[in-house]
Amino acid sequence: MKRWGITIPLTGVPLMEHRELIEQLPDLGYTDAWSMETAGTDAFSPLVLASQWAPRLRLGTAIVPVYTRGPGLIAMSAATLAEVAPERFVLGIGTSSPVVVSNWNAAEFVEPYRRTRDTLRFLRSALAGEKVTEEYPTFSVSRFKLERVPEVAPRIMLAALRPGMLRLAAKEADGAITNWLAASDVPRVRAEVGPDVELVARIFVCPTEDAEAARALGRLMISSYLTVPVYAAFHEWLGRGEALAKMHELWAAGDRKGANAAIPDAVVDDLIVHGSPEACRERLESYVDNGLTTPVIALVRTGEDPAKQVVALAPR
Image 1: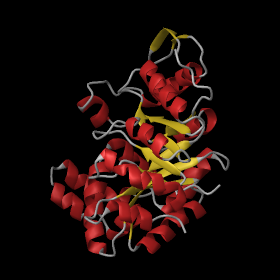
Image 2 (image 1 turned 60 degrees about the vertical axis):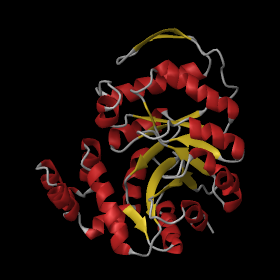
Image 3 (image 1 turned 180 degrees about the vertical axis):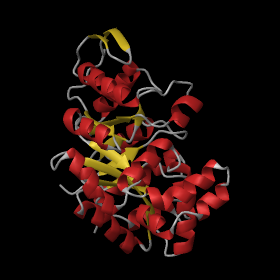
């Protein structure tokens, strides 16, 4: 089955004004709606609404941070969504970043690989209805048992960028979720998870034929994200270390404007899909051609009506 996803909620659109668009998504050819969790809506609430507005959509979190909720609370939230959207919910979990975890949520960002692995293992047991008492390497749980066990446990995917987490996703989870990659990067990521694992990627799409405006927006986003250590390491692994070295140097020196200007056009064009809706669809298809299972559009706000842009970006 060909999958085509959209990130909800759309930036700048009130949550309850999404209903008409979300109801249309399956008929437009969208198969998935994925949420995210940074400092906007929580990951679960938009999907609860979407589960009732469009009962054919598959719904996923990309992602729920493993540090900002306790393990039991993640299990409870996932079980609730699995109950209202049986067999249509995918729980995506991951580390997030030190900014979100420590600066905004007063939690320690330590041992991210092991914490993600331990949370995955706990959730497997808890969502199966088991009573869990376990001393995991990064936390302990005593006598936790869900009171409302979903009839069908949701699939669990891991946010993964580099080989260690990608291999963990392939070995113990039901798929891998990644982002900030070019279509040409997909084969390298696919090689780490193998041919049969679902690979989901959020792809930033700016549907405008004003290339300079799209690049200006893209530079702001790239300098904000790719200066975070985990993303810097990801792009070093992907081979962009040299291309992004000047950006990192200027960013570290506090020169934000200079850092933005130092990002080459070629990097922006690789990582931000822009152009006419038809050109954007072709670029998204190239990700699939290179081994991506599920492209998830993250619409970059341009000032145009985002609902109309979602319609224009629907698969043909």
